[in-house]
Amino acid sequence: MLLEVKNLYFNYQTDKTLFQNLNLNVDEGQIIALAGESGCGKSTLLSLIYGLMDWQNGEIIFDGQKLLGPKGNLVPGEAQMKFVAQNYDLMPYGTVYDNVGKYISNINLKSKKEKVDELLDVVGLTEYAKVIPKNLSGGQQQRVAIARALAVLPKLLLLDEPFSNLDFSRKFELRDKLFNYVRQNKMSLLISTHNLEEVLPWADKIVVLQQGRLIQNDSPKETYENPYNDYVAKLLGEVNIFSDEEKTQFNLSKKHYFPHQIKVAENGVEATVLESLFAGSHYRNRLKINDKSIVIYTPNSISGKVFLGF
Ligand SMILES: Nc1ncnc2c1ncn2[C@@H]1O[C@H](COP(=O)(O)OP(=O)(O)OP(=O)(O)O)[C@@H](O)[C@H]1O
Image 1 (tube, rainbow, N blue to C red):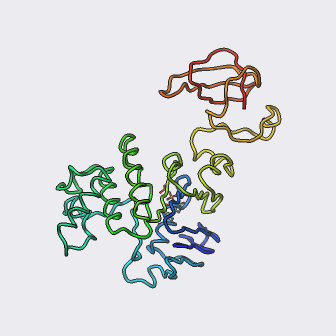
Image 2: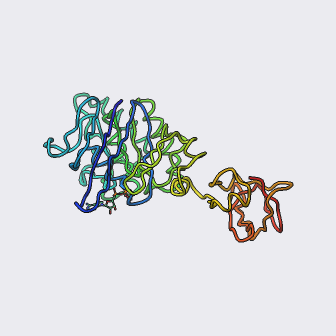
Image 3: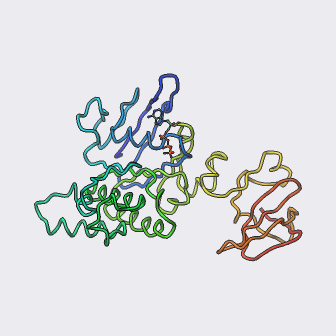
């Protein structure tokens, strides 16, 4: 076990506890997605693990050592651990090259240059090596911070919403390269996100936080097939949620159906198509079953009355 968070208690204000008895484990080489909506405590948890704040009770054990938090450490941050927070914290007057190479030794400048070049390629910033962060977009600064953290090959990398400032095409490219780099170098990764679709293919486990409580800790497949509640289901993308009465009424086996899981069939539950819109890889259709509004994806446009198979 590389990281163990045991019975953690933490609050910002004395009258309001954020974490109550929180437990979390990260194995060596594991990629864990820490998911939850804005304000659930993702950034706080990462900051506590990295040692930026003191907690009230419980233990954080990293690589066999009990961590002490800022009270016990003069310099915040743990050796062998790197944290890319949402403020990036770059050297404003150093170039992108300087920033990425900040923690790489100068003893062998040739190997340092090779390393920085490799990392700039990973984050897609090769052409920006000589630019200073002030002249970069938010998304580019975010990528510099990621490259700088990867440079030291930490045992544990903590990334706080690393794709939040990236446009769609960049996101795909960076994800592939980043996760491959992490796997190849056998790092462990704890990555926070409010959108599970972004990390599902790469994560070994999904840990879901709701108002400071860890409510689900499963593989991506298990989480997708059996979301613990509506909150988890919504983190996985657009979803149809059925009440217990609706479940009985339509004879459904579960509560949550993603739009591609409901099919137009020869017979089944009758529904009326309200609209059918082209959405690229599919048509996105809004339908009504009696008073219940649902969304399904189909390969072709649909209209009128249809039967649905669940
Ligand atoms: N310095 C602070 N003092 C008091 N309360 C805080 C402080 N920082 C955060 N909080 C509160 O703690 C809770 C958790 O915040 P946190 O930033 O960890 O959430 P998050 O899940 O990372 O959100 P986001 O995705 O928006 O960054 C929120 O209710 C927030 O308002």
